[in-house]
View 1 (cartoon, rainbow, N blue to C red):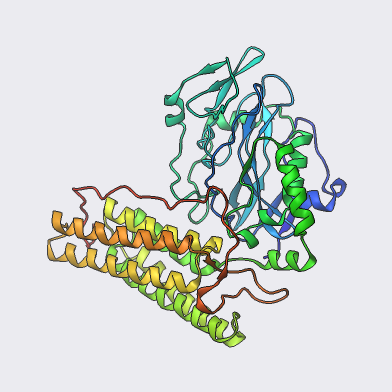
View 2: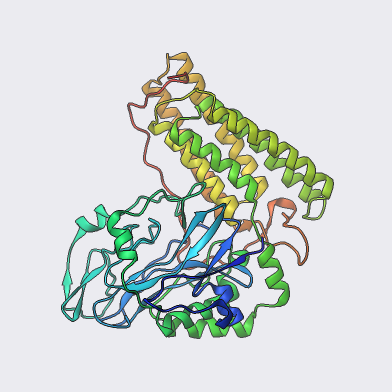
Length: 474
């Protein structure tokens, strides 16, 4: 999917506007000052451990997905010296707007403004910053969040309440706001106010940090499948040494750039699973309806896999047309199920069904799960959904304790399968240069070695013992 540059400046500094024409090609691609609009969502946020504080006075800036020459790439989280006393970092974020995903760049300011509600961790729980605060000319650290390592820090306090109150739960590590499956957090009046304060642009260290990441092949989702080679670094200089080594040993080539720009992992398959998850979560789709929709999606996923395996990894034009017709039919069925008046009250069992469906969508979207693997997980999930429906119908709309326990065991097994398929070194590779996205026979190609701290599966809570909600119209 080709990105188009939005020629408008972002509010990175008061009265500072850098025209797009003045940016180097690399800066323009990296989205340093201007918005980048992309037609498909960024991958899930990788899970990583915060490096120790290098010295007092540094402020943590979380990692994020940027868009560059070869698609989405990860800019490592790092400790940064602020440009002046009294300012805090508002992270950049991706927001779904007008049918595309638009990047809003980060900035320094007296308060932390709106960043889409995206939970980046380490004090950036989606609302404000709980990792520290200025006390006069000294920055004090919240030890409930910050990793000090062996550094002796005197300005320390403990505040877990603010961390909890400003955390938006994001078990699926979604990296964007709004749109299908995105974070649902509108800016508060206070966040809106702070977003319009006088701001200072990212420091030269931050810009250089992003520049290095944009040239590091191991940071691109098309090649690391959502697991960047360097998820975080103690400071920009530490990462720059690693990035320079990568540039020398595996430089980005013209073929890489062509592959990366064409890399859009199983987008429509992921979107259909996302819509099923959303329907279950809101109660617009019953378990019985989800069972039918998921079974239909499983058949399409498996057909995509079989066609690719039979044709050396690609789909022929005729196969693409056939799959598109099938997906159109599935899309109509999902729409009808979500708008036919059959609803259930949101409940723990349906929420877990939705969570499993969401994880399959995320795996497809990041490339960690192939169409063949999604076909198997969707088939299993369809069986669970149907069993939930049958149990509820047989018992007047609810399930007894024994049935809930059995469903929970089945969901645990499916959860392990989803986790294993997202971490089994079998994934959807980038497409051949100038070609179409493909899936190799045997479900995929070998993935590069995982990062030091790979993303674990979201572990849903056990089902609520008093789950209710019948398979009938309310």
